[in-house]
Image (cartoon, rainbow, N blue to C red; front, top):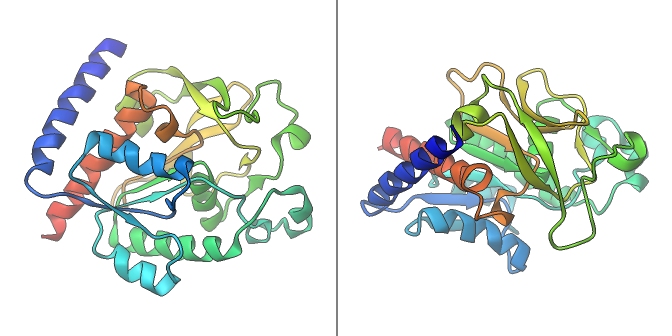
Length: 261
């Protein structure tokens, strides 16, 4: 099954590349900037769709970012600092968080609202996945080591991060993309989804019960949305849990562009 899924991914990449020659997609990123770890997001998408136009929303005022997003075909909410805990009722735990950026929180919420209203594809990664859950009424674990005490490492102070296995729900959108029930992903986070918003359903978990991926419970009539806790942009050689996600997201962005024409 794994080899068949890899074959299908490569076929999709070929089809996507042909579509790109007919005109590049505009893909918005909530933050890229100049740091190498953020540039990896753009490199990851461009490795699959080299003709895509990268639009960095970092530093834009929310209204300007929303206007710019309306000319794009997909939104990637990238990783980064902790989401302000007051957004999910845990302001008293602020001192247990890492760095927070309330300006970024506000701008990304506007971007998310704009994308969902337009039914634009959204791919949310790490912090992005946490923000999407909070926006829809969910909450976060403030600090995994102290609040859960998992024996599975979710963050190591190394450039490679931690690695662990995830278990994928067989009827989920994620399973339809990767076509495997288990996999190994990287991990760079000390926070995670706690209470999952009622509109979502968990699509993958680590063996300690941490939600590693989720999507719409009832996707009909909504934007394509996939939220993952790992960093696919840092594992670009992985055909399933990195490249396949980029292929699927870009395919959805292409469909969105076609509908708007």
